[in-house]
Image (cartoon, rainbow, N blue to C red; front, top):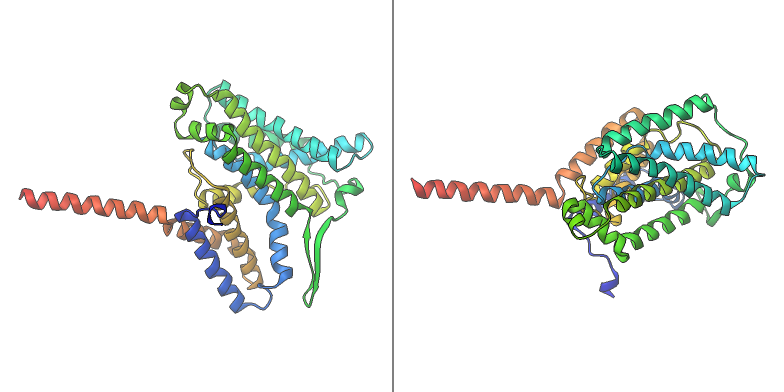
Length: 340
């Protein structure tokens, strides 16, 4: 039985402990936090961010970074809505196919610029972030789309339970999130492409000498994130029942912080899906708890940022580095004393 359970890393253990403490504290101080309605609301809201996180984790493991994915998802929403309305409305099959296709196409733009022009990923994605958002606002005039196909806005409820607080529901984005997370797990842990992504992120030159196609790995990583962004954009439109150009603006930093908090290394070669999910869970639960406590929304980012800093500082990895430095300092001091 134990071989089917994931082995938790030090970061994941610390995140689990911090989340447990926050859940206990919020359950003791509010009447509505630990209810089925509220917990399902957190899950439904977080589904889009977890889809983003699964794609971003692949890019981070490959040694890159991307901050344009949330804006790319907004672009996909508009392309998707416009295309579907031109061809009679479509259905879920055509919606997912177009969302994945448009998203992968935008991801390929990033991959091409990074690989063929040898430009570092942060610079490219800052540029495409502004390019995508500027084009979107210019082309749409900042106008939202409220007239969407019926299949896109009709709520798909997978599970519902009536409680004293109202109806608790699990909706379609949660199921799609589970599929995306499973597909990303298969890519990273069960396919040779995943091992090649880890190898490239850990040591690009070494991976090249081993015969790994570095260009193909760049396209795989950024197109995977683009496809995830497209699916997340579709799920956001379904959840909100509208397409708003700046609805996802700013999500990129929240998701990036959560994935790094979950143990993904910015230099590449390391990261886990469980860590990314726990990082997002910490941020989502904290935001929800602050809202229930009536704390000003302007304090959300400040308090969430402080929690992230504390969690990172208290992580097992960081404490391990501190212990290692202390050990070396003591060893150096001991050698100095012997020399005297």
